[in-house]
Amino acid sequence: MKASADDGSAKPASVVVTVGEFSERLKEVFRRVHAFEYIGISGEISEWTPRPNGVYFTLKDAQAVLQCFAHHSRAQAFPELPRGSAIVAYGKVRLAQWRSRYELVVDSIELTGIGILFKQYEELKARFRALGFFERSRKRRVPSFPNVVALVSASGKGAEDFLKTMEARAPRVRVHFIETRVQGLGADVEIAEALGRAAALNADVIVLARGGGSYEDLFAFNCEPVVRAIMRSKTPVVTGIGHTADHHLADEVADFECETPSNAAQFIAGLWQAGEERLARLRIHLVGEMREILTDSMQRADRADDALVGAWQRAVARRRDRFILLDRSLSAHNPVAKVARQAERFMEIKTRLIGLPAHQLAKLQRAVDAGLERLGSLSKSILSQRENQLALASGRLFSSDPEKPLERGYAIVTRAGRALRSATEVSPGEAIEARLFRGTLEARVEKVNANG
Image 1 (cartoon, one colour):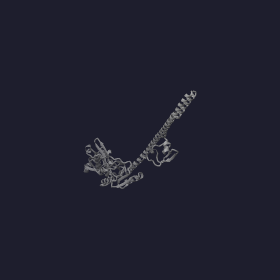
Image 2 (cartoon, helix red, strand yellow; image 1 turned 60 degrees about the vertical axis):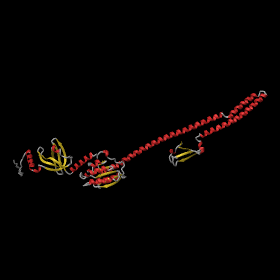
Image 3 (cartoon, helix red, strand yellow; image 1 turned 90 degrees about the vertical axis):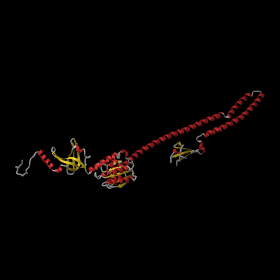
Image 4 (tube, one colour; image 1 turned 135 degrees about the vertical axis):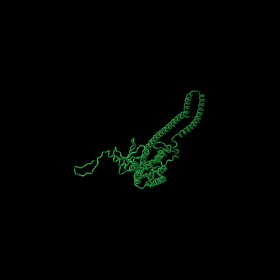
C-alpha cells in the first residue's frame, strides 16, 4: 500500500504496517545480527529487582541505559552485586514485544573495576570478623586527656584540616605528623609502616586520616597490612578517612571512628573539653565537701571545748568545796578552841568551888592546876599535830589547783578563748594567747611542730 500527497508536496513512499508486524520485523533484524546472539556488555548496576520469574536490573554508563533480565537458575550463580557494582554482563539481546523494547537476557556476570575491589573487601571483612578483629571488647579506650597525638596521613587538605582544627580547639596538644602515601600501588604497606613508627613514639593516641577520594583511591584502607598494623598497635587508633558516606575496614578495627580528619580533631579536642567540665564539677563538689567537713569539725571542736571548760570548772568547784569542808573540819577540831572550851568549864567549876572548905579548895586547886598544866601540854601537842595535818592537806589542795603550775613558769595557751592541748589545733599565722601566773601574752603562730 502506498500513500500519495494531494497538497503537491513530495513525500517519500512508505509502507504502513501494524504494531505487531513492526515488532516481528525488528525481531528479525536482531536475529540476523550474529553479534546479538551472545554479547558482553559492561556497565554499572543501578537497579536490582527480584521477581517471581527472575531478576530484573538496569545496566548503565554515562551515555545510555540497558534493561537486563536473568532467570533464577542463572542469577543464583551471580556474585554479590550491590548497587553501583561495575560488571560485564554476558547474554543475548531479545526484543520484548509486549513492551516494545529490547533487553539483555543475562547468562553470567563478571565483576570488573570497583566490583573486583568490592569483592575483595567483602572477603577480607568476613575473614577479619571471624578472627574477632571487630569485637568491641578488644578495642582500647582513648585517654580522656591526650597530650601527644601522632597523625598518620599524606600532605594535603585532610592533614591541614586536622592540624588547623587542633590548633584552634586544642592548642595544648602536641601533634607529631608522620607523612605517608595514602593511595596507589603499595600504599597499604607504607601506611602500615607509618602506623608502626607512630606506635613507637609513645603517643597517647594515633590518628589515621586522609581527605576524600574515589573508592579506588581509598581502597588502601581496606587492605590487610593496614588492618593488622592497627591491631598490633598498643596505642589507641582513631580513624578519620574520607567523607561521611565512606566506610573502610580500618574504621571497623579502629578503637574509634570519625567521619573526616576535622571530625577526628574535634573528637580529641572534645575529650579535653569534657574532662575540663568534669574537673570543674568535681572541684565544686570537693569545695562543698570540704566546707561541710570543716563546718562539722569546727562544731565538734566547739562542743569539745565547751565540754573541756565545763569539766575544768566542775573540777575546780569540787576542789573548792572540798577545801571548804576541810577548813570547817579543821576548825571544828582546832585544839585552841577545845582548850578554850575546857577553860570555860574549869572556870565554871572554880566558881562553884569557891564556897568549899579551904583544905578541899586547896586540893581541888592543885587538881585544877595539874589538869590545866596537862591540858596545856596536850593542847600544844594536838595543835602541833593538827598544824602538820593542815599543812599536808593545804599542800595537796594547792597542788591540785589548775592555776598553781603557773607559778612555776607554765602557761595556759588559748585560741579564741579555748584552751589548746595539741599543736595540730592551730595553723601558722593564727593568733593565740598565753596566760601566765601574772598577766597574759598575745602571739601569732610561726610554725607548727606536731611531733614535738
